[in-house]
Length: 434
Image (cartoon, rainbow, N blue to C red):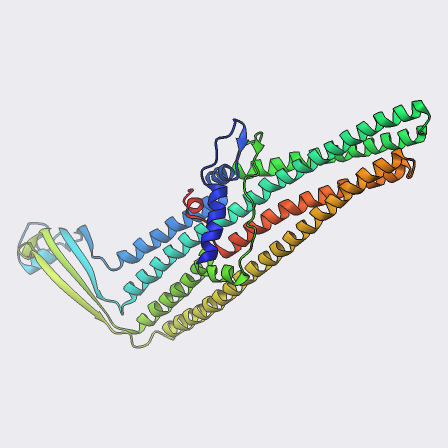
């Protein structure tokens, strides 16, 4: 599918081998790998795979034969008569012995259980596949969390740079105003207004520094270590988006949808298992006796076949079947809901991306015009056509446009990644980072 190749190519560029960089940088790929190693959520989900594997082994154990070595010894009152443990080999002597030891090697093999054991195996195998898919989805959603934290840090750090640039611009303006005041071309109040504006920018800067610290703290929480390195903005969103239907078509590979379909197989297996309770069962038990006493010592083995035909169980079997059938209906409804929610996730993420791209483009145009307006205001101020307050208002408007463009830029990046996560379309290199 063309969209999948394009999406994968973008993320491989993002998460694949990166050009050599200086020391002290941290990429999104590195952050994600550290988060994978640290995440309790993913680790818990991985343990569910082991639990499912244990369930499979338990189901397999009902099919395979059981071999046991059984040792018994009956010690009884002889009632004052009989052999009393004299070792007689007659039936009476054997039954009245004070001690009757016996060792048996026993083989137990279910021959027919209404096919219940095989249905239990199928359900256990489906459970194992389901948990593997859910673990894969947990890794994908973890990537979304890491990307959100990573680009939030970059966004607020870029915001800090914009505010520093504004402060520098205002600093240059105070120098110009001091010279103009000395020449009698400007009033002292204009300088005080500009210095007050610098103080406001410095206050905004302190707030931004706090946001940077808390954003880095959250990223550190996800990756399990302090984040002191420089973060790298190393990928671009595609210039042209494929239609939303292409991402919806990719949902067939989304892991949690596959896991939901496995839940139907699990519920169907449980229903078939309960239906097997209506069928007869046939079991085989074989014993080999290495050691016996009395008249039994020459009998080395015996075989027992047990046929059990259920006639009436007080409605218990019927109740179990009804419960399993209701659970199957629930699983089908849940699967339908999961599929519809997944499509809604893709459409919502796609719409957010589409409109954030348009907003970013419009804000870049507004930022360019605001910058030109500020330069024009400065020139007109020197000609005496506008006052200092007009210049400061123009500068503030330009700064606000730069901040909004910065926010839209990183929002677009995250929205694009959210589309890929929503469609379950992530590159093999990402999913192999375990």
